[in-house]
Image 1 (cartoon, rainbow, N blue to C red):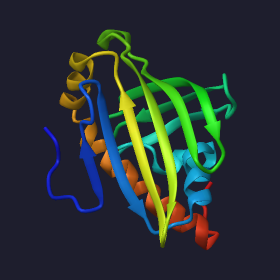
Image 2: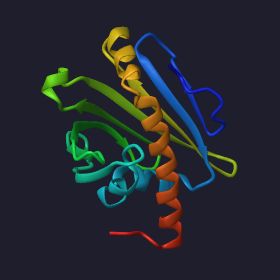
Image 3: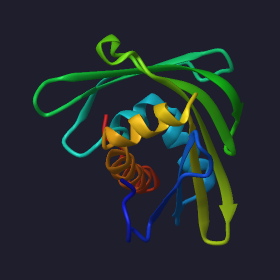
Length: 169
């Protein structure tokens, strides 16, 4: 179930309802936060390998909503949406996240992302909290762990482009 041997991303289950991804980036905290929260950047890193983002809307304020539609290479769309609950610029963002697919029960969870400045970069800690152990385990069984790790690699690539001033539209 959990990927082993990946030195860049550590995946843990800190409680019966949580999945946690921890990754150290040798990138500035503020730039990682910007990449995580601005649609012009999200569309270039969010999603697993072979996917693209057809819709990316962000109203970055407490109570503001967000929406992303991930399109897979087979043409299928996977819609996600949520509401921002807490924003500490550069440091933390908390939001609900729903896989908006009624055929799968439209599961929802709470994501908390912390950006911690460390020597030489930033430690990103993304904690996903489900309503139950069954919901958490069901989420893991979808293969989301591999896709989340791929997204973190894409995030790093996007931040490199941002730092070089080479940001695609």
